[in-house]
Structures are given as C-alpha cells and as structure tokens.
Length: 237
DNA sequence: AGTATGCGTCTTCCCTCCGG
DNA sequence: CCGGAGGGAAGACGCATACT
Image (cartoon, rainbow, N blue to C red; front, side, top):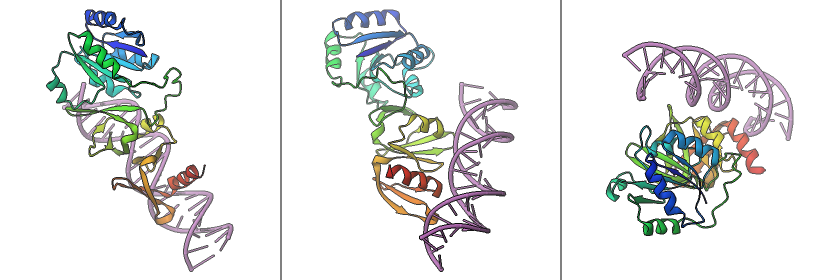
C-alpha cells in the first residue's frame, strides 16, 4: 500500500517511518512537512494512504484534504485528544494519538480495507463512486463516499453537497467538479445541478420536452429540454 | 394538431480582477 | 486574504418551422 507521511516535525516522521518498518505491506513513497508539499506529492504519486498530522504551519490537514480531488485513506496522527477530534465529526479511517503506540498502529493498519484497488495508473483522474471526497462546513468535517452523494447544487461561488441529511458547502465550481466526476454515474441535469444517477428513483416527462427526475429521499431536479436530450441519449447507450 | 427540432436572444453561472 | 462586481460564455427560453 503506497503511503505518504505528512507531518511538520521531522522527528515525528522519522519515528513513524521506523515504526512502519515492521509493516511490509505499507510502502512509504514520500514525506511532506507541510500541506503544500503534501499537495504536490499526492497529486504526483496518488498514494493509497496518508498518515497525516492535523496541525501544521500554514494550512491544516483539513484544509489540505479540502484541496484534493482524490482523497486517499487517511489515518490522522495528532496530539489532539479523542474528544477534540470528535468535535470535528471526522469519520476518518482512524487516528493515532502522539506519541504513537506500536500496538495502536498495528490495530489501525489491520483495520485498513483489504483488496485495495490499485491506484497505480490513475492517469485519468475521474472520480468513481468508490472514491471519497472530503467536505468541511465550519467546524464539521466529513469523508463522504461519492456513492452517498445524491446531488450537487450550485449556489453562488459554492456547491451544496447533498448527502444523508447534511448539505455542507464546498468552494469549487460545478464545471470543475463536473470534469472530475465520472460521466457514467453523474449527470449534469442543468446549469445548477449534478445528480448521482444511482440515486434516481423516477423520471417523469415535463413541459417542453424536459424531464423531472425524482431522487430517492424526495429531492426533485428539473432537467431542461437540452439536457434531457443528452440524458435520453446516455440512457439508451 | 400535437409533438419534435432549429435558431436567436436572454438569462444565469463562474472565473478573474479589483478594492477594502 | 476575503468578498463582491464585471465580463465572457454556456445553457435556457421562446418562437418558428418541420414532421408524423
């Protein structure tokens, strides 16, 4: 499993490095001392896993995750206590309190999903349903699998992300997002909306040859005539 | 006659720049 | 560094025309 360590303290990286020597399936492909370095590394190397500190000079670990399009598995290494982390509502894979205990590290690694898909040739950077994205809304953070997101809605300079009962905002444009998403699973229903096709429950004809798409959960999205044509074409292929 | 298609104009979005 | 305005462009609307 290709792994990158992100921590501003050199000693902390060294420590983790040596601890990980006992875990041959964890292959350390890079180290970064701050969020910007890590951003470059992650985009170049597409690791499967990050060990990451949260507090770092410059950007925090959360801000780093927000910048990423493809978010790897993350194990936080932090001096925060459990309660402080829970305040963020981060459902990360796991977190390790510093100083890291070898037994805890072993536990965390054993919890990693097996049969990991190889991200080796991620040359097309399209996101699939299995990929997760990181969203932050104020103090709350989530890792959300794309398969749980039913709808993206443009709202000013932000995008509302509909999943579960939450609607946090991310600050990207729908166009940029649309390019990243897999066209087989996500459809640009209109200028304002991108829908997850696997959440579509029903389709009704609408005025002027448009469509009204009903999503599981009750949300309804209007598809204009132009997009409806593309939609029908897609479904027939 | 009602529904599909094409075209021109108008609206909305979004990216960039600028000022606080 | 953040927030808001402006301009460019993609998409929606409305009308006209073609087709079944």
